[in-house]
Length: 148
Image (cartoon, rainbow, N blue to C red; front, side, top):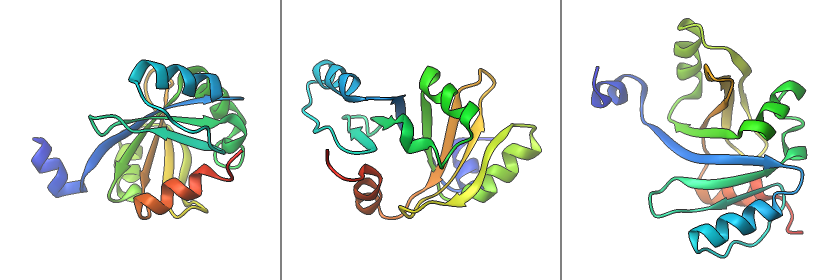
């Protein structure tokens, strides 16, 4: 099956971000700003550094995940990070992955910031967040939370 076949069958699938989770992501943001030559303000619960490839380097405060993931999954996120994958239809991808025996950690649900998302576990234990976003601008603004 080709990528074109998959898009026709399930809609688009796009790696959106590699996300790091920390109690205080400020030092990580400073490091990746230095590495990538960017200048990113430290925001609330979520921060993204866009790159030229279109894949973002993003950061979540650990406490931002408390009502999104079970406690054991938060510890995995802190240790290994999260891959954020944008999809057209979260529910159909979760059904496909469940049928293949993939562990579903968080069932599809609507988030307060407008996205629908679900979290699965990759074979290495890494978390993969599948989401279909509200408008990108609204999603980014609402996920950031208050500026600190």
